[in-house]
Length: 141
Length: 376
Image (cartoon, rainbow over all chains, first blue to last red; front, side):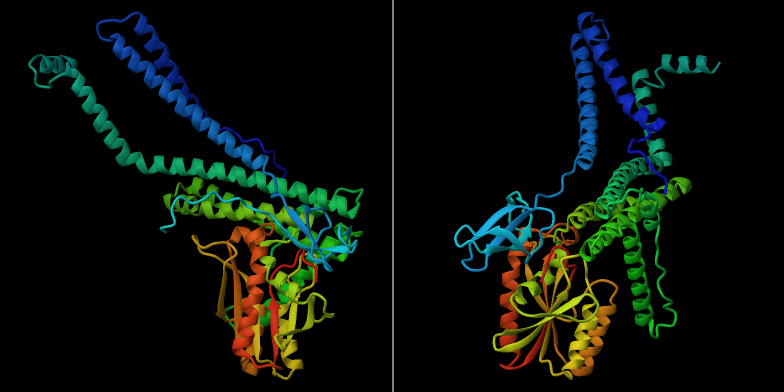
């Protein structure tokens, strides 16, 4: 298996797709601002303003797209494993103690941790992670 | 000459306003472009999307490989670099048996699966000779999750390059359409790899967890390969409760164990209940419980076949209880909803026993699934 680095190679097409909207946006903004301060008969101040607005729109869409792409990549690179919780239970009095998962924990393992009530050794009764689902707006489907 | 003619046509007003002409040219040009190059443009957009996904898959594969190497180094307390051995492991393949002559295909498949299992375990033992049995099982599962990620990456890359080479709309289109599902599966494997590394229970272990809870406080005996059985009195019946031996990552051979129990009891079993994790449909809730009939055992179907054969021979009714979860949950660390469903499943088992059997009968309760992170 060949070892690969996690750096994406940018193809010429991607480079054009990345730079072209920025270039167009820049041209539109600069020309819009120029004609706004120096209007000519064909390009009035209103038209110049429209040009600037069009440039700004293209610029914001491109920026949003770039940020989203970067976010998606960062999400993968910095993905944290789900936080696991271990529940310990006393077999005698049934008292439960919840803590973070530790390496070596498994369900029905008798731990060295003592019950706060009767000092009995506690058993791991559950290991899980909780996902807080967003409440659904509708239950019609 | 041509320019003079056009100039004259404009002068006579035959072509109308020059600005509207430009508009028409742009419109017709756009129409022609979409007619001849629209499909190609669509392929380029899809290829770009696939390339982005492929890049994410490569990151996942590389991260998983790095984790596997570090884990083997840590647990095996190695001074040498196991990267070469792991890379060799990631290129393993298994050839399925001949199906042209279906007679005995199950036994041939079982043999191949056994050989594969032994080979995997031996290789892991060679990689980390100081690891104990549970750690070896966990490491084997972890490497299998890495192998799954590696295969997903390679297959997607294959079709991506094939689509690029042939510029085939249909290859690219099919690939782009199934990518969301594949990405979901790949992300689940990436999570599973971390769970296996730490020995955390996974969603697939729901059945094993039910059996483990039932057999608490009762004597367990090891029967068929990596399966433990306990005789548990439930509602006045004698229940043979079985599961794969934990807490290492293991599915055991529940089919063979059930067959053995049936034969040892000369078929005098009134009911067999198999509990497993089942795939939920979109819209259903994780942790929902459903009942049915049949053998609830997934995988390569060798165990399912054995249970069906033995149940038919001894005329034992086979019931199934499933805990619903999606494919991602099945290989990811266990969710709270699944843990919470365990008591509900036990209630259902008791109800089934009361409805379907008489006091003093013998029954089998099998908890199916990977028992990683679940003792007994």
